[in-house]
Length: 318
Ligand code: UDP
Image: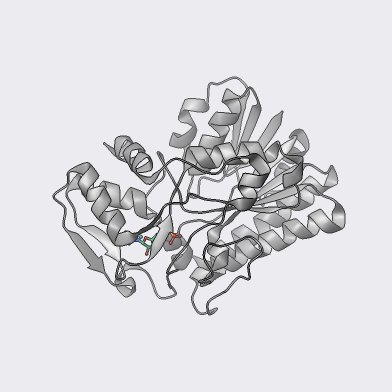
């Protein structure tokens, strides 16, 4: 099969590209390198069946051609990373909404299967954990730019589901929960690569807020496996599906775990949110996925535990 992966030079996209090539498929990557990097796909460049184009999905004629040539489109291209999102809210909204609009319109012409990447951010300030796909979303104030990302992704979901229902376009929406692993950059705010790099360098490990906020981290290999299984599952079409690990940990405990596993002498310091981010930031206190639907659809849920995830990331940066 021929896969078009938008955002394929990004962290998740590059791992997915590799897995699809390993499975004998053709992969075409479309990426504007806004947060992706040629480094992520350097090892794929010479592989048979692989090609890439550096451009944006909002280049409509180009995207139309690439979508036409593909059997399946995995739309991962988006503005990501809380830090970047809070600092560049206009780009975030425009990229995420317009990009998905273009991809869905082009895919609709020949009814190509489209996987739309969404995020656990859409659950917003909900405290109704674990988060089920059919739960209500609780958005924060519009003055807090973080929620522009959540809303842009929620709108992507609405649009994808609307194409599915009204135009019979086969779509699958996936909500990622804190995907981590080798190649993820800490540059845009992601906590695991940041803590690991700080610990390895002997720099202070910066826990934002009071460190009681929790997350469930998911190994990128589990995410890639879930994506591949969902794309092969006819029952997944028209569905919104959480993809996330089950081990909930506070950011303070994460900092301690990273410090212990790296044998680092770094101090753990608390940094107020007002110092960590521009105005317009508000954190989510808890984020835990309900993976009942994923398990029902593909028979398994992400299983790589946090220690194994951290070992992999530490190995990558060592
Ligand atoms: N965080 C932290 N220190 C950092 C970066 C992030 O304590 O150097 C916190 C952040 O405030 C959030 C959690 O780690 O509570 C996860 O942040 P990330 O940006 O990785 O993902 P999010 O789940 O917020 O999208």
